[in-house]
Length: 79
Image 1 (cartoon, rainbow, N blue to C red):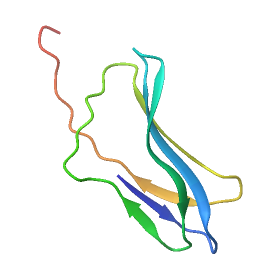
Image 2: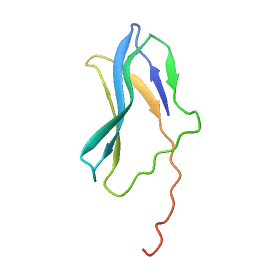
Image 3: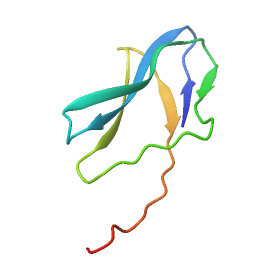
Image 4: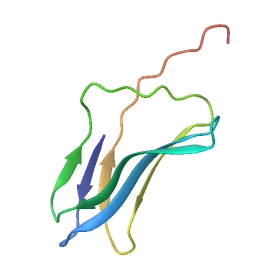
């Protein structure tokens, strides 16, 4: 996942996974990013999402962010 701040000043953004089965939000980033900078999240970590789960990215008002989030999709057995 990449989060890039397109604005001319430091802005805040939250990126999180909403686990619908647990009614929980698991934050992967919740903070500021300097103007023209980006945050890259990898490290070999994996999240197993299920039907109904979502990834949410919310930036502060008046900001402009570009985001890239990639997925690997696997068919669940028995479906």
